Image (cartoon, rainbow, N blue to C red; front, side):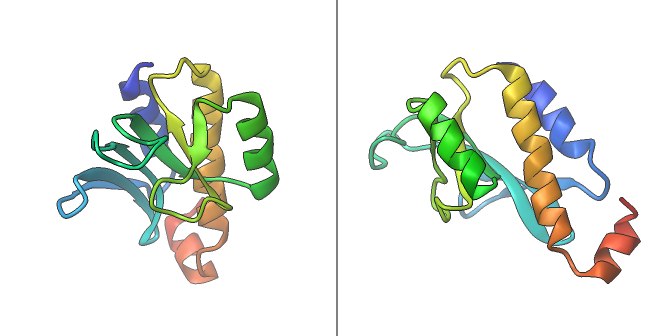
Length: 126
């Protein structure tokens, strides 16, 4: 999967920024001071099923998570180092349809943006 398309989609949203998180070694996308996506490669000695995988973690609707995990059990995992009830980690090397991943990027942004204080949402102007 072409990660530049994912990066461009994540940054296309109003107020979206990204920064490398030195301590974690991950790239993180933010809106209004809150994380809505992160990209990482899990260390080879990470616990299964994450070990060595190139992951994109995204906020997601709990019902949609259940659907995704049933449809793509080897490619959609509980959120890596996050609440698996509201976050998913998708294996970027598992052959998921690019449109699906891009739609999940949009959903993640929308879910996080909707929970921002009204003042911040108005400042961002989405």
